[in-house]
Image (tube, rainbow over all chains, first blue to last red):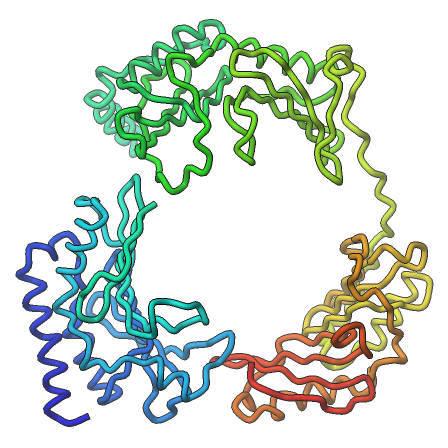
Length: 184
Length: 360
């Protein structure tokens, strides 16, 4: 990855943190400081960062799986909570994917626009008619995983929200287009 | 002191929340109308009832809001206590929506039904049930009052008595091995339908450990001989499982070829018959003998297995299984490897020839 792209990537997440802090939609979820997380991660493993899966739980704990760029058949998990990033945790697959499969699955960090997240959460709530819902889990992963057919193999943001009466999930493309919405 | 302080806090909290809450009757079975009035006051809106549990110590109701049919709440009541507000329930968790309008809820019938069910329990030597429940069965059928009777003497025995929501048309069924069997209500009323006797347990006493700690990946021949001595006949294997601390053998029973007995040898050498199951029809039930498998080579096979899969060379053996390959073929040895990243499998045939070694 060129230096320009790397800076662009970090700039994006930096601006996300600033926007997330200002945006009214973000006040109902303790958005993790992804800027700090990515900064720590790049300092640790260097660029490029290729994301296998990203999840954020209700409390804002982040679990990011990235491809090891020195051993591309391996995937490591980094957890981030209260400003602290974990050491690499080896990811153990039931059926280990080939290098080609991992290469195909990962998402370049530079293509992820984290600034869209508060808007996606607001859209999810309005789409499901659950204005008071809380985040249960937010996940980003390419849709080709686990052998199940999805819309395509595009990266999919899944925003899962709940209230005491309902559970709901809305799936978005990377550019924030709603792909699917369902509610129990 | 701390408990007292907590009690005061709880009382203060309740003082505001419970000020207008209806108090649940102290003797609910004696006054079903008062029970219904307390629930009506607490719920405060038109609802349908999907489930109502009724006993003298506790009652609860799962209701659906008539004005908002995807809103479900659960109300609980303890005799003599103010009733708390309902707990919202996840709509997705309500699998069965059979129901009755609250206005039609017949709690006098519930009280009668509980009395009848308890009389049947006493007459037929079942335990006294705590309550009855108005609901559908697990397949969402037969909405009505139901009492479940269980037996002190036979933990497998279960009798279900169901009534219509108005308490009429009782019927009973009993859980047997192969499903529900209808039971004659007249026999139950006469006290001549006690729970079936518990099956006699004629399993052999466990063999105590010999004090020597084992690692079964280092060899199982001696312990298979001990299992054989316990069984009292040559072992007709269906499946052998080995890990460091446990050896498990499924053998076809010498007395009944349709039974599979599983013996467990723990790492202290103790042996017990863990379970006996019916052989599964169309499964491979053709036994193999100790002479059909490379027992002497097994420790070396296990020790060398991780190195056969280069990405897992630093891994460890998780489990070893020996059973007939494919569609009832010759017995093979399957060694499961794992490391921090994943799993692998090594397979040998019955003569110790390597068949495959690959990452899973």
